[in-house]
Length: 424
Image (tube, rainbow, N blue to C red; front, side, top):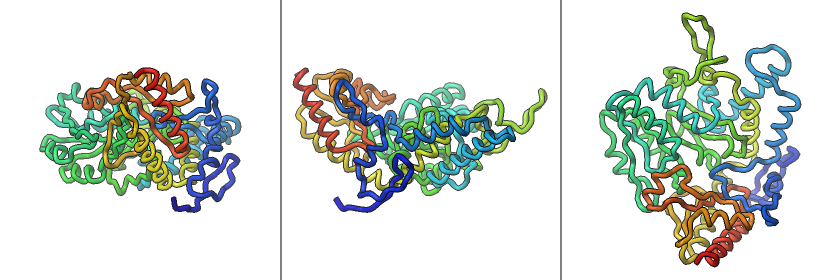
């Protein structure tokens, strides 16, 4: 491996020059990685469900709670002005992180799920009607299926589904064939949470726009692992969650093109999303505040900004490259095991490895691995159509982050062998 120089912010905030992905220094920033589970060192391979939090983000949460906490936007006292300043600074960090044109295109939500629901209610209910068609893919998380089903049932619209091949790749010719004069919306994952497939979203967005169709991208599994440029993608909406990006739970982001957000109705009503209220009429606030009713997740948004600072200190391109090395290594090692099938073998994948062990239920796999401190996810991963496509009830899923190591993958492989000895 070629050695490169890079800088990362450490636990006490100083800048460190380190070799490319100097893993021990990075791991030292994550106190939970020192945990013992059943007397064994924690091997955390469940990052697609939720990543861990580095010390600088934890410290930022504590500083806010101890020195800055107040409600925002409406008061003139010191703490409120300080909290407002830091909250809006986090919005600008997200804007730069996604390379959005304007900070008003960034809306804070509780997570990807709420962001998608916001678009369904605010855009879908206004612009999609009876007989209109919404295109989804067979790879989608339930959060990008159920809201559109709800809309279709309410409006009498129709869902069309892009199929996939045996590798877990979308069939692009069949995707293109779905478009017609009734097509009104495309909702698509950037990266599959169940298989790790990286979809060719830029080309798919361009094709949809050629037909006048707006596009929402579920970026929950992409934003933490690779650079994202929403202007280059030209997507109309992009959503992600903070807790998969080394931040806290309860915070997410919806990016939307300003001209679309301005046309949309608010998802919720309440304080701070209004300019004036009488019993006869309400005048809504400007974007993004029109979509941020009530007290927002102030602390979580500020901590998300700190998480973005941390990831930027490492570099998303370096993170993507290192995680690909981990995935390639894990794929090679697990593929060599007799009786183990990797599910999802797309040519372009993020660091997700779904697999099944012949004769063993995935829940048993997860239980036995946990006895050795190895944390993976088992189940349908909120992607039951994917499981149905591959004719399995569930999979075992190991998902990697930039603080994981090849030695941890070796422990996973040893754990799989242990499972096989116990059940086969």
